[in-house]
Amino acid sequence: MTRPPIGRGGVHSDGLAATVAEVVHLFTEFGGWNYDELVSQLDHARQTAALAEAAGAGDQLVAAALLHDVGHLLELRAGGRPDGNVADDLGHEQRGARWLSAVFPEAVTEPIAGHVAAKRYLVSVDPGLVDRLSDGSRASLLRQGGPMSPDEITAFEADPVSRAAVDLRRWDDAGKVTDLVVPSFEHFVPTLERARRR
Image (cartoon, rainbow, N blue to C red; front, side, top):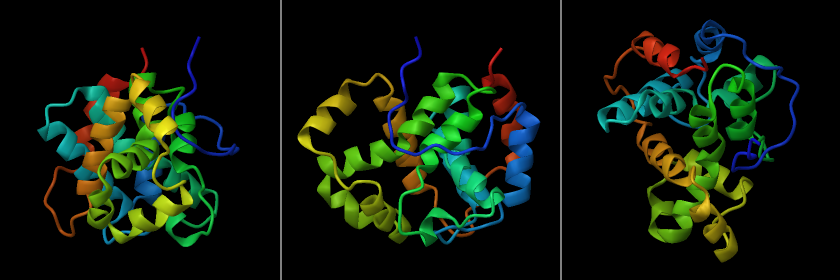
C-alpha cells in the first residue's frame, strides 16, 4: 500500500503528467516567472538540482531537487497567482508531487511532498534558521503552519522520507542566488529520464 506523502495541501484538478517531455515543457513555458524570490523558477530549480548533484545525491533525489516547486508552475498554468502573492497556502508541494506521480516514483515525489514539512521541522529544531531564510520563505512559513509542535517533530523524524526531504530543503534554501552560474535545465534532462518510473 502506498503511504500518503508527508506535507499539506488541497485537491487540484491538474490531472497527471504523462511524460518527462511534458514536465520539461511546463518549465519551458512557465519557468521564467518569479514568485517571491529574486531568481526565476527555472534558475531556482537549476540551482537546487546543482547543489544536490554536487552533494553526490542519486538521480532520483537530484530530480526531486529540480522539480520540487513544480506546483508553483501548475498554479501559473491554471491562471492563478504564485504562492508569494496569496494569503493562503496553496499546497504547492502536494500539488506538484501528485502531478508528477505517474511519471516518477515515490523516491522523487515524496521528498517533493515533504519539502515544506522539512522547512517547518528545521525551523523548529534550529530556531535561528528563520533569520537565514529568504523573505519569501519566511512569509510562506506562516501560511504553511509555522514551526512544528513536539508531536509533529516526532512524527516527522519517524518518517523514512524525512532525511531526503531535509536534504532537499537545505538545497532549496541555498538555491536562491542571483546570477549564479549552474548547468542548464537541459543538463538535467538525462537525470530525469534515469529517475522516471520504469
